[in-house]
Image (cartoon, rainbow over all chains, first blue to last red; front, side):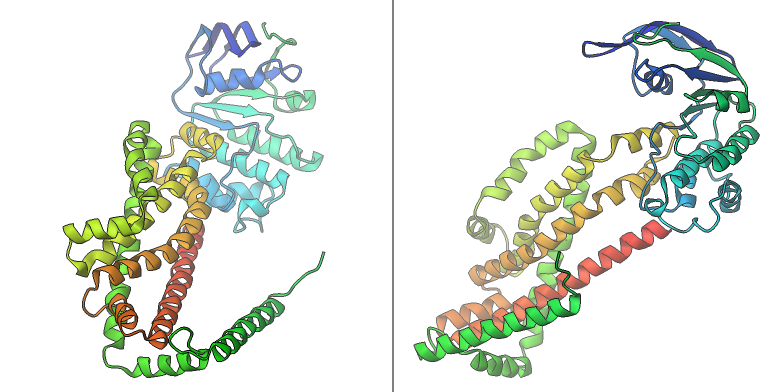
Length: 196
Length: 254
């Protein structure tokens, strides 16, 4: 089932962030959201994830099982990478699977350290593995590759590509190279207030 | 910036203790009245003889068990109540008058009131419990309320159960609040517990020994027992906080 966003409006106080925004996100496809900072991309994701409600408009078709790479890493700092991923996974995902995924994107040797001791780029990759391994029908990716150097970004994009499966993916990005590398539909959100 | 090594800090502390003892010794010698101020040397002598007395260990055991029980009960009750209050706002409002009353009513009023309700034997447990409860509750509640909203959203999105939320989000966040509350309240539990024993005078307690020291105007006994209380309090404080920290480390590594 496609996700249909219809005429949604969102204000924060007097600040109009989304103004009658409408879009369709096809099932099992990757859709990119691009647009200038402050145009409401993250607000839209937060609405779709269920953290905030729109003031007006309707949304339908959002799957129950969700996963995300947030704009911030949102990791439990005192726990190691494996534990952080385990938090989001059910029992079907065993420790060896988690380790092999983390190692695949270059985190070998940093698995036992608390994530507070990892670099920004490493933390980002832990957040990506967490989102990929969590059981879900939809993936929200909010600038998932920010802070990664070119080489690591390439490996990580490939990792994401290999692990998206048949999930619906909505990804916020500012980088056309990421769009080209992953491929998918592109929705460009205009400047404030955002509407398509 | 001047960097002071832990070794140097220890030496400085040792010197300050030695100086304080020297000032005490000189003051007592100048006063020359053991009723008013006994010398540290005399206190040390009395302390040694106290350790050899047959009822020393039983008195220590009596007070130790009761005061620590009061502290531990308050730790459990304060933690449970703070979790309930953090989860349900009406519970916080309902608990507010009790916690405010316990925090503001003088401990002596509680002791006298409780003497009417309870036997003097268990008074120190109840008073320690009462004094520690609001500290644990307030600190823990503050910790729960200030838990990172973004992490809670993340846990909600990934459908993490309450056990995972406790382990990964709440407990690590509450840790500094709990350690600080325990550090403050262990000392308070001993102070209030011993005060309760001095007023209630249960047989075979440290409080009874202090009361006898007052009755017989024995400064040596008073100081010697006070040192015993301070040592017990510090030892329990260090041991308990060490175990608590180890527990947190184990949890984070599990």
